[in-house]
Length: 136
Image 1 (cartoon, rainbow, N blue to C red):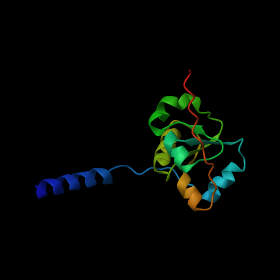
Image 2 (image 1 turned 60 degrees about the horizontal axis):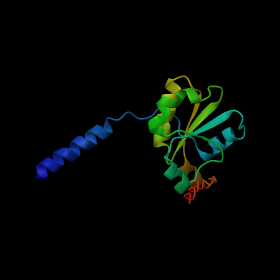
Image 3 (image 1 turned 90 degrees about the vertical axis):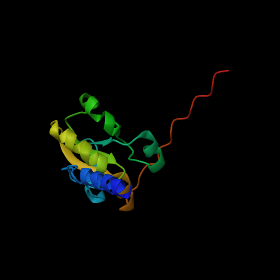
Image 4 (image 1 turned 60 degrees about the vertical axis):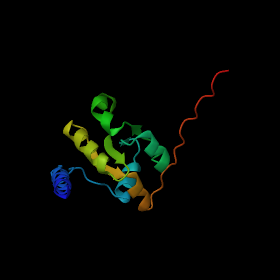
């Protein structure tokens, strides 16, 4: 049984190690702040789930498209802006940035919201929508 578990762990580690690294640049707080200084030229695309946005916070203006849905919503993304993708620690954001760059979008890089906050940046706390009261 131990051998089976060890083989499974080694196989999982090998599969994980073979995952290609993202090519997108991970932006620092200073780099993102510089881009945000010209808000009419940049678009933040947050690829996190809604529960992550409400639990952690985000940026005041962004386009929300979950990572799993990004490819099917490419036509909704303007090509005339510099794009920064956002996730919690920039992992999913970097993969999303790679996808967008491969489709011709002008991508500056990826940023992690939690990393941005740890570097001294301020996130906006996002309140979930209130559920409508049941009709009587």
